[in-house]
Length: 175
Image (cartoon, rainbow, N blue to C red; front, side, top):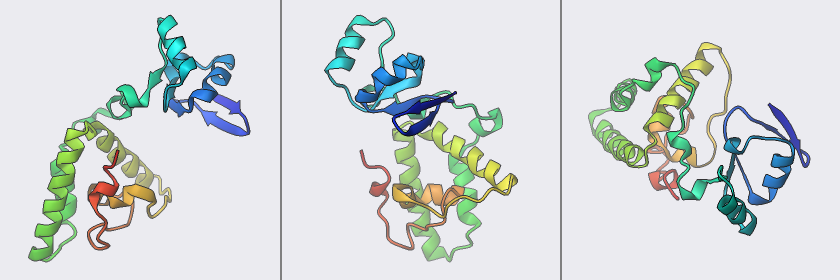
């Protein structure tokens, strides 16, 4: 579903995050409430939610996009993330001293991924990367805080080795 909104086009194939000010426009365009997630509450959103049987979700109050039901083939949802990433790490053929550093960093990131309930999201990213590779689609070398994640590097989402460039993993896992 395509929606024009104040010089922007939004595509709805899942839930979209918007600022509270855009909600009235989306509702007038008959975008279903369950497709709208606000990035923050304002008085209008709070009043609407108090009166509505279908409240508008807020990303800051527990509507966690990482727990969504992603449309991913079953085989990807069953991937053992630690095993998958471990195989990718071994494929780098690093010297033993560097392998130890990379393995420790990978273990720390995997612990954070699990703690933040991002396991399913990372399995989805494996599916996305493998689909892009199989269709010979070109994507960027890396951008933003994702480049601070060694796990995303090992999955193949970006080409920036955060250990080599000394990028702290907290740049990715910040609030």
